[in-house]
Image 1 (tube, helix red, strand yellow):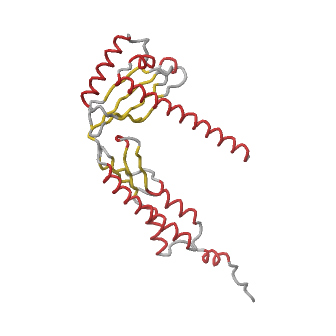
Image 2: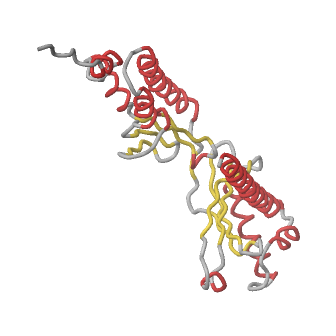
Image 3: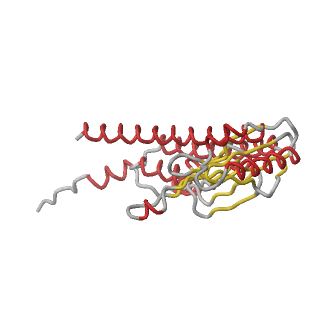
Length: 260
């Protein structure tokens, strides 16, 4: 049984690593495609594009339009960052008519502004669509953003760890259940998105009450879960509402024998 579980875990890990490598390869190819397009290396772009349904001349004209827009919107010193990935999967008979479509995103930014390219990939790993968002966003000030987020995260994390230690040093029974409540019950969640601002989620899982992302500007956020589980556990500890080992000893002690 143990051997079977180990094999299953190994297969899951290998599959996950393979999928991760495929995603990374697609994202890096997307970044390189945008780099080549903006630099005017159209032959490299055409080798990656799906030219079965559109002529090379039409593609080159579209590349020229995208390149002109980038050069008119941004300074020459721009950076390119993978901006995300998603895949739409179809099954069985529909697979032949509507194969899986993959969308990848590339962030382009200078010191002041940024925007996002979206690329659509076909099943044969060719780019069938490309577009740039109409919105040009200002680059957010991340210094204050992270200072506030880290301070709040440390407060919540410290409180959760403090209550875990209180449970560990106590003589209550089923401590593992209290630990799970502290770790998992951190709701509701209040966060701040670098672009979208404050957000609130009533039911959202945050391990030990903190979550964050620093992938790119559109996906940069921190989220802090209210330590509801730790508050409840600490209150019940202080109010002596949990069963203790002494209680279990009392309950299991045999009653004295009655004598006639």
